[in-house]
Every structure is written in structure tokens, then in C-alpha cells.
Length: 459
Image (cartoon, rainbow, N blue to C red; front, side):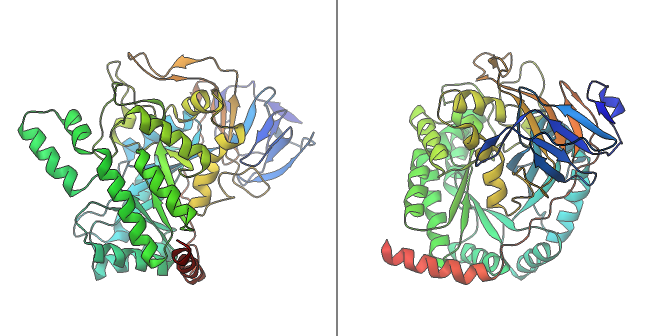
């Protein structure tokens, strides 16, 4: 026997049973198929295929006329060890089709990296989405090196975030990169800010220029361009892979393209706001993220996204992710990530449906070594699914003047084989799960260094 999704969401809470998603078109980063998906009792995808039989006691979710895609993977949030913020932002992410967040964790002065991770993990469990971590490295000494070793070995962390314009000297950054690579971990760089931007911002604020305007005038494109080139150089001389972002300038895309053409292993992320808004639009600033840019940069970012040079989209969500007041200006990266990309990407022909899946889930999962557990629809993968209605009408992201337009619509979200969101209400998928990200393997170091040596000769 099977039960219908027509029952209320409350009747699904706490009842982990098999779930058959029937009648939809499954879309992955590689292809689209008209097949059914059976979610097992352990939260995994148990079977896929045309016209699957309905097991005894299995619930059925009608996906007729809908696209069935992997749950979104957001590779960059800045929530931190705050349970309330995690609950608010996780709920908003789930409603928008994102089922996995990779959050940045700062290590307070005097704290151990492992202790900071433990505190963050406890707070993140209440977000209702799956979660993983980047650890932020803001200084370099033996204690930090030991912390990196501990979290890669024991905590499922395989990436560390650094600022290319921060207080670390080049020799210290090289030490972090070299140590991370020996551990099989990836370094990710913020490149848009730093000491030069801080110096400019102080002068602007002393002149009475407000915070938002001061950020835009201080975090100028040439600083991000120089930071991107510096990060690529530092990683390149060691033969290390590198992740960059969020990138927001034409120069950054150009530098990444050149590096990849010379064989350097590079991935990058872009925020949705930089794809759909420009400096002429009204949006709140966030000092941890690049400001909005001119139209020429927006066009270059679309080119980089469609060509795979900046192959994934992120939200950068933090404090601003919870704003719900009517006067709040639009910040589209979290609640509008899929709808805005669908309207401005798939709707305009910039992206195919398969590329849409790649930039919202699969590429991030690959870059941070959780594919095919995440970002894929195949037997054994986590049963995280978004049932997407491509016929969802075009509408403004919010009631604010100048809010960007989005289209398409999330009808249902399945996380871990359980219906977590349906229509306009949460169905109670329970606590989020930590996603351990395996290190890339020590053998990668020698292989990549050899490849970088050959690339340097060719370049």
C-alpha cells in the first residue's frame, strides 16, 4: 500500500518511511531523464528507474510536470556558532531549495580550532539543513598548524579560508597552503578586501561618508584583481589547488581563466547578487562580501559562470540572511538563489537546465569532495531532492523598489529521504546532519605538484 502526499505535513513528521518520487523529470549536471526516484529508510537513494514498483508501506510523492533536481549546496555562508541564526537561515535556505550549507567558522583568539568547531557543530544542528565547515585561518603558528591537523583528522574538515589582503605575510600564507596540502585539504581565499581597503575605508569614514558607500569606494575592483592574482601566484608556486571567492570582477575572472588555461587547479564561486544586480541598484552592504559592481563586471561573471571558470554560486549569508522587515532592501543570494538563476540564467539561455544543476549543487559538491553523496541523483547518494516547477510565474524577489525578478518555484523539498518542505510550509525534517568532507588524499600533493611544474614550463 502507499500513502498520498495529499495528507497534511504534520502527518509526515517523525515517520521515516520509504518515499517514491514518481512521474517527474530527473535533472542532473550531466543529463535529464523521465524516471522515478525511491528514497530508502536510511535517507539514501535506494533505486532509480522508469515506473518503479511501489514497495509496501511506501509513501508516494507525485512529481508530474516537475523537475526533480539534487538539493542545492551552498558553498559559502557566514553564520557561525549561533543557534538562532542557524535556525532562521537554515529554514530560509530549505524553503528556497538548498539542503546543504558549508559555513565559515572563525576561531576566537586564544581558542583551539577543534573547540571552535565543536561549539559550531552544536549550534548548527538546529538549522534543519545538512551542514559542513570551512575553518578560517587568521594567523599562523604551531598551535594553528596543530588545529588544522586535528580538524582534518577528526572533524571532517577539508578546507581552510584565508584573506589575501589580511595580516598574514606571504611567507605565512605559503606556510598555511603548504601545510593544508600536506593534510590533503584545500585553501579558499577571500580576495576583495584587506589592508588597502581598510586604509581607504578609514579615510572615507573620517570624511563623513557612510558605511555602505565607504565599502563600495574602498573595495574597488583593482584590489580584488590584485588579491586574486596574488592568491593564484602563492598557490601556483607550491603547485597547490586553490578556491577563490566570492569573485565579483572582470579582472578576477580573467586571472582565473588564464591560470586554468595554464593547467592550475582552480575553482571559484560567485554570489547571485553580482549576477542580477549592479552598483546602480539599492542593496544593503556586508563588510565581509564584495560590493555590487558595474555592468561590465556583471557580464563577465555570467561568462565565467557559463564557461565554468567560476563554476558555482554561493549566498555568503550571515546576519543579513535573517532580515524580514518590509523596509529591508533586497539581498537575493539566499532566498532567491534558484529562482533568480532560473530566470536570468536558464530563462535567457545563458545556462542549460543541466548547467543550472551544476552551478547550484554539483560543482560545489565536487570542489569540496562530497560528490556524489551530495549534488547527484544516483543509488547510494543522499536523498536530497528539490521538486522544481519551471512554470512558476515571474515575480519580484521582494516588495522593495528595484528588487530583481525571479521565476520558477520550489514545490517540495526532500532532505535525507524525508519531506522537509511542501508548498509554503515546513514539514519538519528534524535536526540537520553534519556532512564530513574527506580530505583529498596525500597522494594528490605529489601529483598536483608535478602537474604544476609542467604547467609552469608550458606557461
